[in-house]
Image 1: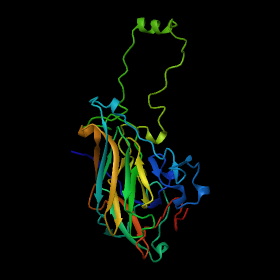
Image 2: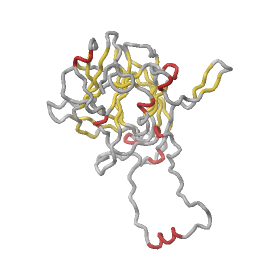
Image 3: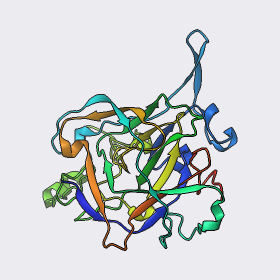
Image 4: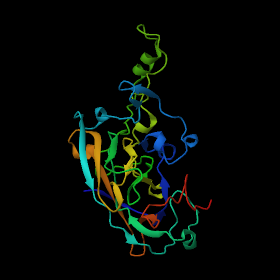
Length: 314
């Protein structure tokens, strides 16, 4: 049974999916030449080498995979798995006026008159999930980057600091807060003596220090719902969720289904492979968490916040 979490009433504007905007949640996989942003705004570009007898350009290290099951409670080893999800377009509800404020954009004002000829619909976020010990990569198939009638949303949330109630009723993911053992006087003095076998004075680095920041685990806390974010992606983009990143199941927007190849690790222990929370509203007047989806006359979803926004007022 998923844990039930009270959801605040928040309306979330759409952002453009870029590596710089998504970096705390994972990795965006795309050919920089096909990015909707100019190259000057993409930051450091990935390394490339010539391949296939000069007929191909190999872009190196496009994402970062993590298998952290060695610290799972069951200690059951995981294997790499590849599945396919055939995701149908989601049902959206008609726009209704609301006093809810957009999420992490604070007092950003989205007046009704600012949207011109765009058509606004709403998507209700009812559930979030995470995979605490593995990254998870979604690769769309058969979707053109120029497709105006079908796109997909990437909805993510930061992780709150751990608390005594953070993982009530389910197995805690990494990093499980350790119980500090009281050391005896003998242990304290033993540690004070220099070791005859080594000159090492500093502790060894964390076993996760070598991982790219986007691939490191996020901690055992619940999702930070007040800072939930929504990104729009096209067929030229795949996405990797970092280990433990809270995210909504994939949300297809538009005319037809999208086939996603999904790459991750799994060990078959349900609470270690996937954890979910149900987002509950407190009363009939509470709207909950809603993503605002504005589309132009061709059905293309419009970006309303962050880099590349159409009419965001700062």
